[in-house]
Figure 1 (tube, rainbow, N blue to C red):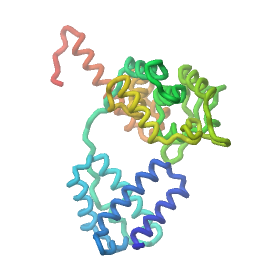
Figure 2 (figure 1 turned 90 degrees about the vertical axis):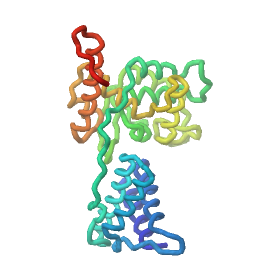
Figure 3 (figure 1 turned 60 degrees about the vertical axis):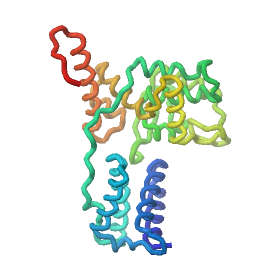
Amino acid sequence: MSELERQIGRYLDELKRQNASPHTLRNYKIDLGRFLEYFSPPDATPPAPAEFDLLAVREWMGDLYRQSLSAVTIRRKLAALRSFFKFLLRDGVVSVNVARMLRTPKMPKTLPRVMSEDQAKHLIDGIGGEKFDRPYPERDRAIFELLYGCGIRVGELAGLNLDDIDFGEGWLRVRGKGRKERQVPFVSKTREALERYLAVRAAAAGERALIVNRNGTRLSDRSMRNIVRLYARLLEGDSSIHPHSFRHAYATHLLADGADLRAIQELLGHASLSTTQKYTQVSLKDLMATYDKAHPRALKRKR
């Protein structure tokens, strides 16, 4: 085993000890594994971490661009590498974090596509109907009601346990990024879906997870993504809808109905208000489109 591979293994073990989310662990393992592969030509040993300089990591990043990867993907891979070298710097393995010398690619200024209220309701109401012969309709309906009714991330949903639900007060205890906990209220439709699901939930002995798979153990966030895409394709003919689409819809629809932006920030678990403000842009865009269409004196804007 090379020194670079050994240090990557140490870093991943450290992330586990810090209770990093399964999603983060999976992505960092893949990204750092690809970094190792890039610097591991046949019959050659990759450089030790202390041997990396700016030219080497620039070469690696240039290869990411040559693969035509999106800015989002490159930013994630760069974040993984920076975190890895930060760990090595803390332990004295390297004297400088060379990954921090790389320029972060800019994100394209695009607004998230948001489902309408009618589209979201139609999709959710179609789950569990007689149209589809699905084995766990109550569970699937609960997944959708929690995503749209609470605006939580799919990883947060996968991490929910039975004791995170307070039916008396109507709250969920959600563990977000960085293991930060927050309370999120749930509406009557979500309560009804949860009660129907819990009445038929078949879990393995001692399993604490709220949402379980066919083996009675915790359902992964990847499986939830597949479930959402399946229903979106079957009911809406739109395979681009994913779990985060419901988070966008949740925030945008709350804002459109008069909710305070600060309150939405708290509900979503955003560390910065600027992250939440993108939903203001979405709502403003919809408002201007409605104005242009409806007002007889409105100037027709170029779309």
